[in-house]
Length: 151
Image (cartoon, rainbow, N blue to C red; front, side, top):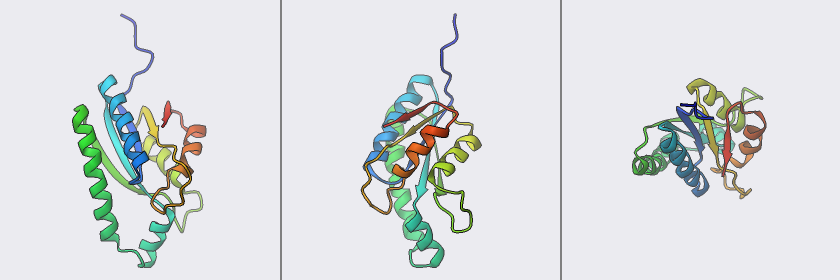
């Protein structure tokens, strides 16, 4: 029996609470189901939220509540496909590290969790503060060492 051309144990899907990122979770769950893999959903907080949390103008508990509500939606999607799911949150920006941005945060997480495959939403530029992944998609496509599906 020949080896499959691709072995996938962990699929990373960054999300930001947008409908487009929920669609990406659907694709990630389908890939995971096909390969018998698990999904790791990473909620990426955008620059405005990070700055607001750091300056105290945004309630961190409210942000966590909103991210958790979205992750419930992610859990439901994974459950439909019967794939294992893990989650994390990450600041997509830093006021102290110039090199931290959504793309680098995604690739760092991919390395940390040993992801074999990435699914990233490629969203239209909408200007919504919570939707940060459109800024990361091109970076991830250029620099990821794993296969990437941009949806």
